[in-house]
Length: 513
Image (cartoon, rainbow, N blue to C red; front, side, top):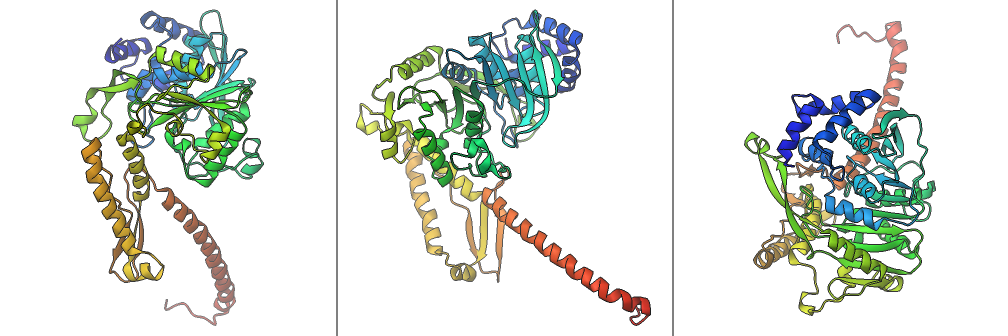
């Protein structure tokens, strides 16, 4: 069904003129058993295929926050892959961490209609879509509107399985316990560590993930809640980050023998997110000590998806256009499962890697580091992917720009010539990479000297992101301003107490002030 046809049918079922009104309509309808049943019956008439997440298509098209949150929802082929990879023989209750509208849950349910689900989600706007997706499929589930990382719960709902459709009600507490997990959490998100985080069970055996990046915080949270497998879609950066805390967490996960497989995915699988992604499957009950490394970057098919313009003027944002994306075929997914089960070793494709070999490679988990290639000339990653990683790092540096008086910079030990050389080197590489792969290396723009006396200025140099460096500076500034305000109030109180008796006695006359 074409998206715009779906939208018209959608509006007729919900009896709304504007699609934006559907969030409030769903909220009021779902908690009324009779209205919910009638809505499900009407919807089934126009969309009888429950294996397809039509609600995700609607939410992604009309409600996804691409400008600030860069929201992008899980493509079906990745959801199918995660559903298969997380499968265990005795699974009963599945946790969907950061569930969105339920794309991963639906594909997991397609594999096993008897599963119960615990769906945790932060975005209040998508919760009604998620509840409706569960109700219409008659899925027994708990939907927990919460902050997964702080474990703060706002509301909890239950979709109770019925004869044909589930009923929806609000409950006081969760009762399900998960034995497996599926997740596509927000990538590279900043977070705030809870007080005494190191004492929490999820972080007690390793480092607490850095506040600059929550990727491993999601992983460790999930592993603490389940007894079996967890399959995560994550940015490739988690495989090789140099952050010391994240390196220690990688080492912990490897040495605990929790990692079952790592699959590097093709690029351009998402509609908006350009970050290279991978699927990591964790297994707390592994019976062997190897990690299956798989490279799918050159093994994909393509399809087109309809998308709303999200940036620029009205001439662009009012436009609908088709975007080509890459997908992993079901036959490819089945082949991946076979390689994992058989500890496959195929040149240029996959390899079962021992923990000792990973240890000797400083716990770097990038599959291309281990997989043998038939042609040694092509043993490296594609140039455009390497350039994309370089640009990601430079862009992060450029987000915070320091302008400083040249004399002060030198007195503080800044090697100004080194910064100038940094820019020059990048310019040379940029010309080369543009020639060989069509991608330029972006210019370094995070440091500038000035002749203005005593000038030191930090500026957020991006319209899209807030610099993590600047946030650290801001937090230090905020703490010190708080201290200075306390000191100021102390001295103001002292001044008041000194002045008051003399003002009352008339010793000081303020008539002329």
